Amino acid sequence: MTGALSEGIHPAEQSKYHAALFDLDGVIVDTAKYHYLAWKRLATELGFDFSEAQNERLKGVSRTRSLEILLEIGKLNLDEAVRRALAEKKNKWYVEYIQKMDESELLPGARECLVRLREKGVKTALASASKNAPLILRNLNIASLFDAVIDGNKVSKAKPDPEIFILGARELGVSPRDCVVFEDAEAGLQAARTAGMYAVGIGKADVLQSADYVVDGLRNFDVNMLF
Ligand code: G6P
Ligand code: MG
Image (spheres, rainbow, N blue to C red):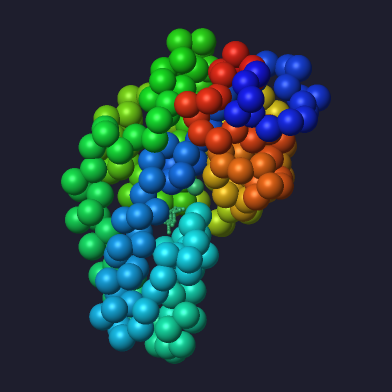
């Protein structure tokens, strides 16, 4: 255990887990900046400002719900067909940005953590709300480090619903109680706990209230602690 880890030892830490499920944005890569650029471009085109602080409300939220929040901020009431076209436009810009991503954008320690877990025989899954997750994994050159990929194309309920993690455990062929989830958002941590999994928060302990344990980044996570 290092000083970077939060205080408090959860009883579950005594046991060893068999699988690790990872959120993507904020855990493995910082795609939030590209989502922000694309949403901001859309807001500008629609004639209103969209700040980085407001963008915090979109983290971990689905594309459709993100657009709803953006339009609330811009005080715009648009019909379904227009909204769908705007979401597609935003995604086209977002994909243009992430097409250019490469391994240098992996967050510190992410690859090493995945490699260490696999060396220990731990099963790994990605569990992200993003429909673009497969493209991002390819560009970061880490697709082969996951036994399963659960993305926005496979789930219908957003975190904090546990659906994405339950599905992840099922695809890995393990019981939820044998899984550890790595998440940077409260909603994701709540989803993990509801799924009956051990929840590691990536970020600040005062913000990530639902985490069983908090570490400031994967670079400071010692895999021997839980696996
Ligand atoms: C992640 C991000 C959200 C994003 C969502 C959907 O949860 O944190 O900001 O809106 O994925 O991403 P997508 O690539 O499908 O638009
Ligand atoms: Mg996240």
